[in-house]
Length: 344
Length: 245
Image (cartoon, rainbow over all chains, first blue to last red; front, side, top):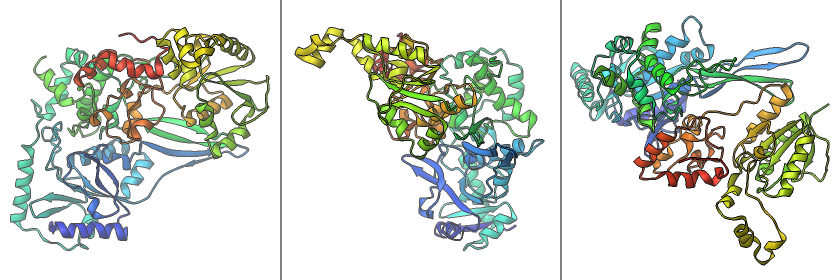
């Protein structure tokens, strides 16, 4: 597939057309929220802020909503149970490579041995137009995690190469969409520009891992008893902010909600996370990660080891959202991994 | 037979009852599911026969204490509804002063005609079976409790701090706006309504089970505040709770 170059003006026209024609479904894009950014439904291309550093919540919320009804049921002589699966088409514009890696992890987790219809249907009906992050957040360490650039998980990937955007075409779906826009074929010189922009951006990340990302599992293996976990966890609020904003946190809680007339009800799921006190509490009342030190360590192992062992991706993409959200300033996996590495 | 439900008001603004009335269409389902036999704000009916008693307000006179004990004897299930009943609420602000002083400020020359006692939560006097925190309480939580009672399911208090729902609501952290927010140490279940509305958490739903006081102190120091600053804020709704420095 032929990569392309599009002017900023024509990109705006392309996005406005997507909104008007709904060719790829509802258009969702990155927008300003006061002095921060977040994903929301786009009314027009002018709302789009492709120059952003990080979205408050990762775009996973469109495939795995904060609260989602998954089942409706009715009691009575012939009880009925109906799964609820949302299949509306969506086009996400302005997804950063590290957030795309988060979505790919979800695909691996929810598309594996126990496929999740709710997530997979939304993924099948979605189009992803990514954008390279040229203004990383000061807490981000995606460059160290190898997630600052991605060559998979998108239909189109935009890179700001000065006056224009380089458009890397990832899929035939992306190809047929961009063909409708006013573009020109990318030349080897354009591609060089893209590669240079990407290379230069890697240097803008202020937080760096003091090891290679693929060395993290062995580091954790050798340091189960590290006092770093206790030191860090001492000031943990157990507020769950780190796990609520994480693009790779895949856990949820399930509840049944009967109607007041008791004729039926619905089952919904809601984001849950291992840093919350009740997460590991089971029906007997036993809590198998009762102490915040245990929860803190578990989260670090989850990010740096467990998920990689089960799926092919590390459980941390280095976006830095947890570090931004953590009032106690303890949540950054990079910081914990570095401290362990330094033997502190 | 449908369970008989009664609402009783003690010292408070009656905003909790108003919140229940604000159910809109859900109130119709609620009335279909239970018999409301006592509800001063909505009905002139009166009954001493009931299964579930919702208590609004805190007990602030000796007469209140006698009354709550009688209600407890009659009710199979007693529910503390709202901050005043659950924690003492804003009424507990008066505990900072002597009772004589309070009477004088409020009633002036007529002070001798009245009596008052320090504000304490309902659970200080009688066994409370369920708490619905908040000022005002979240109407969805009232509905959830009724559903639990109807289906025989245990009513679990929402245990996560306000931060969880705040993040789900995609809010910008109140601390990032330069506010000192009690969200990290306050029990959620309110959908972080205050922060979502552009304010901060005032702690009306009482502290979580394991508030990290040390971390809170560090946080305060970073924002140039002291423990006293925090206590002043925390005690607006939780003045009757024992809070140690």
